[in-house]
Amino acid sequence: MKKNAWMFGLFSNFLLVFVPLFVYAQTEAADTVKTGLAVTAKEAGFGTESQSIYDLIAGVINVLLGFLGIIIFLFIVYAGYLYLTSQGADEKIKQAKKILSSSLTGAVIIISAYALSSYILGALATAVSK
Image (tube, one colour):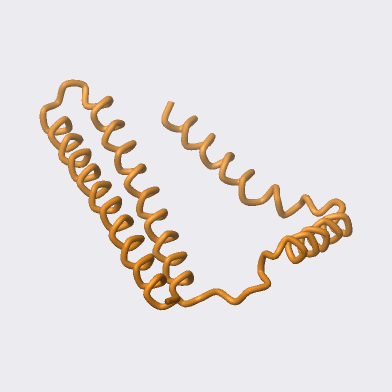
């Protein structure tokens, strides 16, 4: 069973990585769409103003916190997997509970960091713009 699951995972990863390399149909149409989107974005006013340093820092912080949120989610899923596959083994249950509690603590810290950075950057942007 494990060999079949491993082969399925290998085949899925192969498809995810290599199939898009072979799909280059209508590259001219894709370039036309990209050009059209660029024109539309310019007419809508996107990308015409330079970004302030505060907006740039806020964007970087949001991206980093987003990645941390994904990692926390993966740890929660892993803890659930350990708990469900423990088959009553106290050691695995304790490990799963420890990972879950640490993940939830990390999630609280990440949400607090987001709130704090959002407040500080908003206050700085307001103070600079006055």
